[in-house]
Length: 117
Picture 1 (cartoon, rainbow, N blue to C red):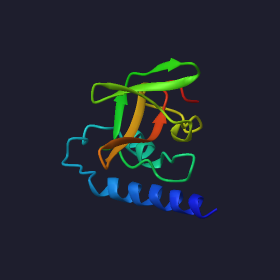
Picture 2: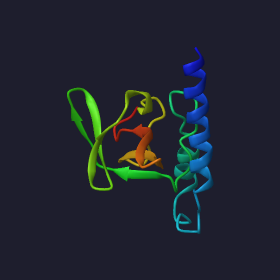
Picture 3: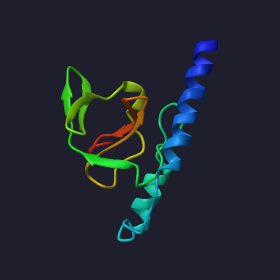
Picture 4: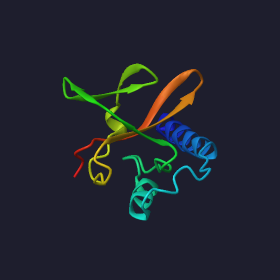
């Protein structure tokens, strides 16, 4: 139980830390309000917000043995099931992945497939 609490705390701290680096310098001014609202509303299955439009990366993806895979910085990575969001829809029509760099690793926080309902 203590490990579960520690994992939850780590996930929360990572989400807060990644939010601090999200900067909107006006580069998203052309994004319609409903798309902006969707990016801000997406929440991971564990209840942690996925962040904002500046953190979500539109991406291609592949399905291998029932798991989603996405290219991040030139390397294909498996999306952990805990990060897959299927119930928020997807108004952009492309898959979106949210990830952070943590201690030399890339951690995928959220992933919405292109055809999410």
